[in-house]
Length: 164
Image (spheres, one colour):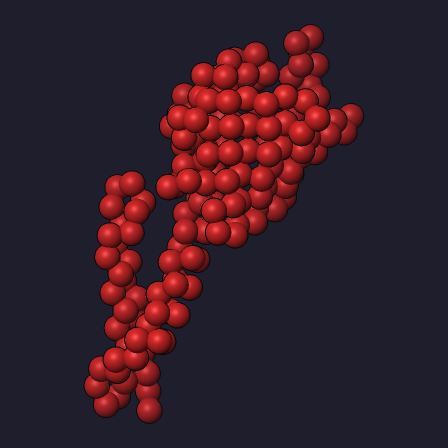
């Protein structure tokens, strides 16, 4: 018996799932198996959300690398929280905006080595280079753990170590 599975996911503009249609077709006709459909649907949704969160983070980082800090902030929740472990905590877009204005005298340069997604979390591991107040380029190794909420970056836990 030949079996084909078709999964259609329709998204609205806020990246929320509107409709999911799972069709399992065999050489005999349509097969209605709720258990198989449910498993396929859950896995498909999970994989789609993981890929979307990764894509959102990639787009947000691209905005930063171009110096478009307001463009980056559009990917964050209004009450976004950034924790730089052992350093400082920023709460809300305004504090993040102020941080970017002073820390990113010019757009930082990213080298993302790994991007790992699981559920509402995306972890980015890599290197970032940015100028300090004296204009000297400083290199850092970082591990950023982002938590997403409804398709937006809600919380960051950042582990950043200077590697010069």
